[in-house]
Amino acid sequence: MPRPHLRLFLACCCLLVLATRGAGLDTPPPGAFTVVVIPDTQGYRGRGAKATPDSADPVTNPVFRNHTRWIRESLSAQNIVFVSHVGDIVDVNHADQWQVARECLDVIHGLVPYSLTVGNHDMTAKGDAALYQRHFPSARFREFPWYAGSYTHERMDQRVSADNVNSHQLFSAGGLDFVHLSLECNAPDDVLAWAEKVLTRYRDRHALITTHMDLGPLEKPVTNDGYFTDPKGRMRWTKIHGARGNSPAQLWDKLYSRHANVRLIFSGDQSRTVAWRLTSPGREGRPVHALMSDYTSSGPLRLYRFLPNLGEIHVITYDTTRREIVTSTRSLPDKISHQFTLTFPVTVPTSPR
Image 1 (spheres, rainbow, N blue to C red):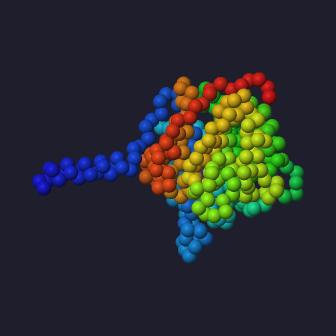
Image 2: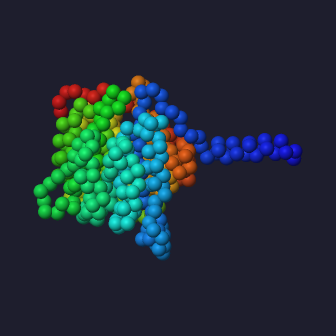
Image 3: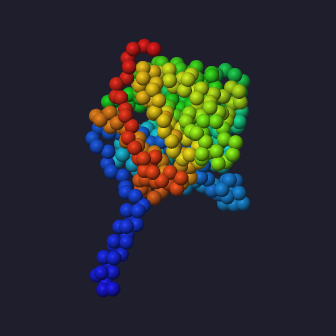
C-alpha cells in the first residue's frame, strides 16, 4: 500500500475506534447547570481489598480518583454546582480505605458543594458509622455556607445516625433554589422526623434526596440470579438497623411522597441492576423521579444537566476514566438506560403543607 494511502487508512481506523468508544461531552447551553452523582465507589485495590485479597500493595481506588479529578477539571466547562455520592463510599469498612476516600474527595473539597450518603458498606449492620464520622464529620463542612447541618440526637451511642451521617445542603443555580437531603441506608423513624422538618422548612425550594437503597428487586432475592431477574421497583426490604430500619417503600410512604417539592431521588446499591429509574406521582400529583445508578468500579458517573428554560433535565452517563459518554454496558446494552431526558417543573408550590 502506498504510504499516503497507508496514512489515510490508519487515520480512518483511529476514527473508527474513537467512534466505537463514544463521543465526548458537549458544552451546556447558556442557563444550564449540572449536578453530578457519583455511584458506589467500591473499586478498591491493594491490601485488604476484596478484589485483591492477597495483595500487600498500598490501597488505591483509581476510578474514584478519576471521578474527582474530572469533576475538578470540569467545574467551569460543565457548570457543576453540586456533587452527591450515593453511598458505599468504601467496599470494606477499614481505616485505610476511608483514608483513600478522603484523599479522593479532598480534590474537590472547598471548590464545589457536595454531600456523602452512608451506605451499608460504610457502617455495621447496626448502623455504627464511626469510621465514616472520623473521616467526614460535620466539622469538616461547617465552614461552608451551603452546609445546612446534620441530624443530631442525645442518645449515648453517637456512632449511630449522628455527626453527618444524615445531612442537608442548600444551593442555588439557574435562578432556582435547592435543598439537598442525604439520608443513610434504611434511615430509622427518628431520622425521618428530622428530615420531615427539613423538607417542611425549605418547602419553597426544589428538594433533591440521596439515599443508598431505593430501586432494585422488590423483595430480597433468594438466589443470585434473582438480583437480575426478579421484579424491580422500590424495594421492600432492608440491610441496616434491624427492625428499626425503613425499607425504600416505607421511606416513600413516610417521607418522600408527603412533600410537593421533592423532585429527584438518587440511589445506588444494586450493582447487578446497574441502572434503573421510576417516575411516580408525589404530593399534588407532581412527578418524582427516582434514579438508581451503580456502575461501581467500571468507570461511569452521572451528570444531571438542568435546563430550566426547557423544563428538562438531560441525564448523561459519563466515563471519567476513558473520558467518553456511555451508551451501553454488557448487562444494559440499550442507550435509553444511560442517556435520557426527564421533565422538571421549575415552579415550587408555595402553599403550606
